[in-house]
Length: 282
Image (tube, rainbow, N blue to C red):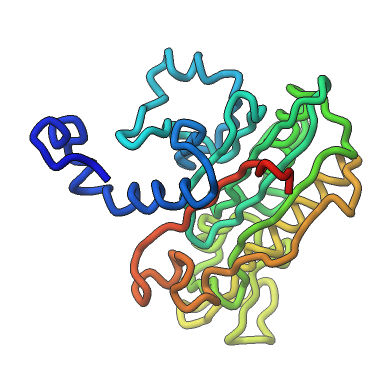
């Protein structure tokens, strides 16, 4: 897929040696979807920022946007990103076990807007631990991210469609702690909201010791579903606009999908997720 000469090796540098497998897989995936590489913006989900396609020139001026050797653009630092399809036809990211949420709606002028949220342990919290502020209220990252998009694009709530594409279930997300403090540091507020359960001691109750031999399930999928549904209520998005059909649990896939929890068994890898609107609109 690239010229094996000195010039190309110099241009690509260490990317060919260290990233060519993932990049060539992406080349193949983009082609199978009927996309051109230059239509895709690959977003590095490395921080809890919310990005927008109409700000790409500013991001480029700040040096955040890089051009990949194979044709697509890359930008790090956003756990949520939104863009009009006229600005960015397709948004990609690489995940393992995390919740992948897709958004589609019309802006105030009738333009199609797409977006995604990366739901991960570091931006998912119990209600009393929400760190994100919107209009002087502590909210979930889902409400924080979608709220910024709504403020920017002014969509009719009835046009907002949400799809939960992937999220690991509790029986595949196993944790052990030697203190309540360690649990709260790792999963702030999850226990209080019922998203962490002791499966080795079903009689465990609040205030009991937490020995490191106890086994806990942390239910990412149920927590992110709670956040999505609460956000929909807040913004008056119809219940029927939430699609949960065919959600992927990478931990149940026996290595077909990338699972950080099962990386020792199946290898440390990442799945590719791409949000775009096909030509047939489906």
